[in-house]
Image 1 (spheres, rainbow, N blue to C red):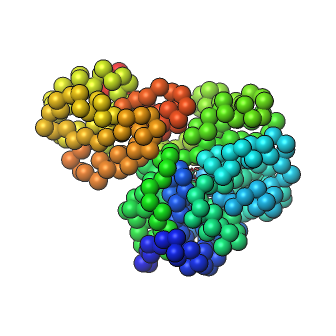
Image 2 (cartoon, helix red, strand yellow):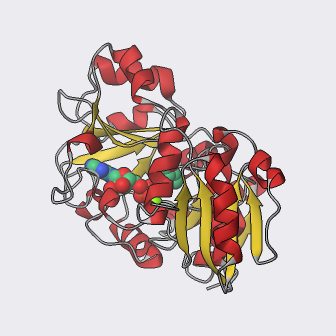
Length: 339
Ligand code: TXA
Ligand code: MG
C-alpha cells in the first residue's frame, strides 16, 4: 500500500479514509497518533496489527469535545466536567466508565472503561469533526519504539502499512498525555505527562493517587500499556543522573570500541571535550526542550548502527521532568551510568 502524506489542505480525503475504515496517522500536541474509526472494529484491529501492539493494551479515543464523550461514557461527574473545562483541549487523557456495549472490546481491551482525549491540534480536531466519529489513536510507532514527534518518524515505522499521514510539523510537547483514571471515586494518575497531579488536585480539590507509587513489580498496572518495555532504541541507554557525571562519562566513552551517543543540554555538550567516538544530540537547555527532543534523539541514534550505547541526561523528577524521567527510565530499562 502507498502511504500518502496529507497536509491540512487534504482534510476531506484524510477523513474519507478514516470513514472508509483505513488508517491515517494524525498530529497532536504530544506525539503523532495512529488513527482509525473507533466505531469500526475491523479498522481498530488493523491498528493493533500495524503497530504490533499486544491486544490487551486499550486505545485512547480521541474526541472533538465533551459532547462526543457523552455519547459513550456514563454521565460525567462535576469533577470530571471541571477538569474538561480547564484542561481540554490539551494533554490530559481521562478514563471514564462506559455505557453498555457502545465501544468494542478491541478498543477497550475488554475493560468497562475507555480513555478519552481531546487533543489540542486544530488539524486533528477538524479531522475528527469531518469524519464525524471518534478516532482511536495509540502513538504511531512500532510497539516498543520511541513515540513519533515528526511525520517522518511515522513514515519510518509504518510506511506501506497505513493509508496516510497527516503532516503538521513537529509536536509541541514530545511526551504523551497524562492519563488520569476518573472511573472510581479515587482519581489516579496512570501515566505522568504534561499536566501534573498538583494541577489536577487544584481543580478538583481532592488528592490524586499516584498509581505507580502503589505498584510493586508483581502487580499489574492499571494502564495495561505501562507494563511493556517501551521507548527503547536498539542501543543500550544509560541515564546520567548529574551533569557533573558527564566528565567521567566522556572518559568511559573514550575507552569503548564503539560509537557512543550523548544526549544532553547545550551547556553540558559545550562544556566537555568529547572523544572522537562520541556523537552528540542536543536536548536544548531546559527540561521542557529536553522532553520535546527525547524521542527524536533516541530515534536519531537508532538509525545509526555503530552507536551501541547512549548516555542521556537525567532531570529532576518534577513537573514535566516527571514525564521525561518516566519515559527515559523505560528506554534505559532503569540503567544508570556509574551505578
Ligand atoms: O499523548 C497521547 O496520549 C498519545 C496521542 C497520540 O494522543 N497517545 C498515546 O496512546 O500515547 P498509547 O496507546 O500509546 O497509550 C495509551 C495508554 C496506554 O498505557 C494504555 O494502556 C492506557 O493509556 N489506557 C488506554 N485505555 C485505558 C483504560 N480504559 N484503562 C486504563 N488504561 C488505559
Ligand atoms: Mg505508545
